[in-house]
Amino acid sequence: MSQITIKSIETIIVDLPTIRPHHLSMAVMRNQSMVIIRLFCSDGIEGIGEATTIGGISYADEAPETIKLAIDTYFTPLLINQDATKVNYLMKVLDKNVSGNNFAKSGIETALLDAQAKRLNVKVSDLFGGAITDQLPVLWTLASGDTEKDIEEAKHLISINRHNTFKLKIGRNEPQKDVDHVAAIKKALGKEIKITVDVNQAWSEQIAKRYILQLQEAGIDLIEQPLVKSNFDGLARLTDFFDVPIMADEAAATVSDAFKLAKIHAASVFALKISKSGGLTNIAKQAAIAQGAGISLYGGTMLEGTIGTLASAHIFSTLPNLDWGTELFGPLLLTDDIVKKPIEYKDNSLVIPEGFGLGIELDLEKIEKYKRK
Ligand code: MUC
Ligand code: MG
Image 1 (cartoon, rainbow, N blue to C red):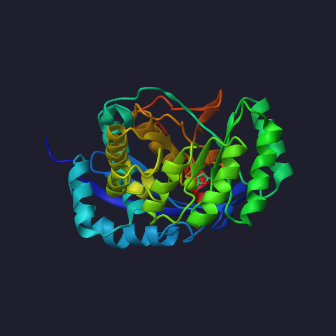
Image 2: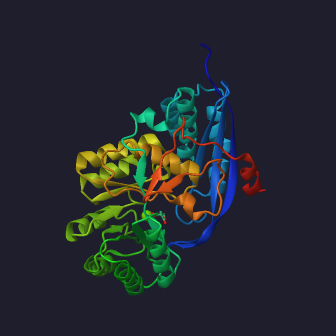
Image 3: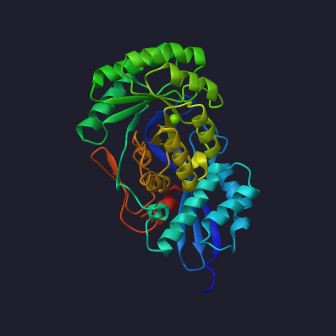
């Protein structure tokens, strides 16, 4: 059989408005910019991928424009005419020749896996031993910037059975103001509703000690990334000190971060994201480290659209220790979609579609409409 090769790679920046402003400690999002990757192979199969970050270059050290440039200028010449079926080999070539750029690598690996799974008539999750479940629990982030609006939003989502767990983004205001905001929402929604908070690295260790105590007393279920991502020892001290579980997000980016954090038990939970880790295969490796260390898992998002969200869902669906569910709500934060059939969300969960590969088809008219000119 003649070799199946990669013929061309197209990258498209798509800008989609959000349904409301989304307030994080480092940025306020009013739209989301996604790099969509179309990888065309000699057997006529197209693999689709997505590389997306948050708030331009404020969240991570890659931005939509640098992701597109890195793929077009540096990744593509390394991949063209190579065997499209050798995903691990191609990722090794990229790792050897490209330093960092994990978001871009994740988008390319997604496209390669989508193509390979379609070629074999299986789902992407089947390439990792198969899904344990076809439905993943999904929380919603309340981040309108206004306490009353957040309460109203949560009550509505609870009433239509779309979400029963909420994450609050804090770290943008004075700590006491943020903690009062969280406590007011917890009180309004009641004991049954789980609330987590994401500080996105905004606190020093001393501030964290003082205010996590208040959050714990208010009944908050999980504290995400209170300290700067490089402070692994500080995170370990907080994990040891508090009853409320501490989750590493920005700190737990790569496989080697997972190993170093696990070694000192710096967190009780890891937030996994395909973008930070450089792809789905690395998520499986991080998950194995966590499992060995008795650390729970949470399926994180970089607020990707449907493609990145489903790529994440496929790998998360194979993990036995996804104790904290997921936050794969990215497409619901956007006013429109660029695939023919949007993801179904029901019973506080995301339903992974039937169909080979990721199980989606691009809507090329929508891509044309939202494509950055
Ligand atoms: C983050 O740091 O977790 C995930 C959900 C959300 O609202 O923001 C992201 C980023
Ligand atoms: Mg986070």
